[in-house]
View 1 (cartoon, rainbow, N blue to C red):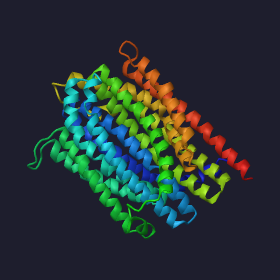
View 2: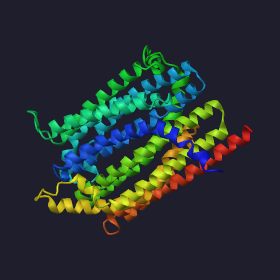
View 3: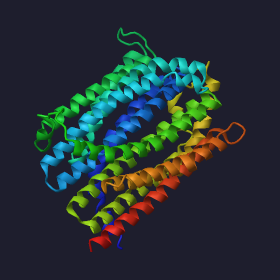
View 4: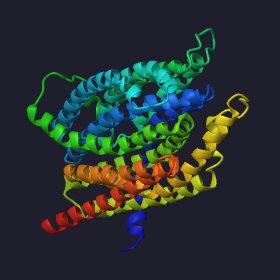
Length: 458
């Protein structure tokens, strides 16, 4: 088939995906700013934020993964011009996300003692616990925000979550600056100041997105007059049926990266800090793929609502191609700048910690080479997963992600990540193996299902 059949979709795909990318990057940018500011305090503080956030990432993956159930249902209702169904999907999604946010906060709050059982550096654990108390509470506004975001994406109003995230970032940076370093008469709170910045910014984010959607003609009737406690069992079951497997898909992937944080902690505080740097940089490029994944979910959901299955396949493949191009560019950039980028995170003027900082940068630059290689598979697996969610196919992809990350990727990370093997680089070889397996298996699944739809409806 002619290449232009796919490239002609790039412009609209980009219009849908770009605001999502920027919004997602906003979440990661909060972490990026925290890491750079905290990195100025020392490698132990950076490792502590890494350890605290490892618990957060697991909880966030469940909350964000579950909330993605809202998007395909709203997108399908929007394609079919069914307001009642769209509002029901949003209202029940908002209720379930609020309940889930509270449960995840309690889970993380009471899981803190596990840090001592995980053989992590004691100095790091003692710094991480007060940080985690506050950041855990921010899970509640974060998961509520996700309900609004996924609803907004489902209506193809992808700009509004981006605007709310930008405002939240500005608030976060401001509070970080004054609270971490004790500026303008505020107390100097170190990494606890970073936690307060994150907590405040996430409440601001929820208030802002509601205000934006309330002022828009297309969305205001959805987000006002919500009878949140008048519930329909059928819609709740549908959202749980879609959301629970989606949450597990994201959990399996995030948990393997979290396992990499814990495995690197067994090697010491410097490998753990280096892992955090490489992970933070990799997660930024991943957010571009996440934006395309959401666009894939929306567009496939719309075409499913219209029952245009040939168009559905063509549009999905145009998104896979766009993701591949971005991944190649990012991979090249990581290879070129693998030594320069980690230097952003540490203070080379700090004479006392100079040796530690040099070791952290050396390890992180090696990990960025592994990250450069897995850009393509990481990008494609999440975009194909978005397309499968658009088809409302979630159970088999959940099994695929479990096999790829935990039966293939994790054992390789565990064996090659030991100090007497390849250390930190060995951990990331396992990540590469898991992501590549997931990309191949999920693509086979999507290709099989869409060909079957064409045959059935031809």
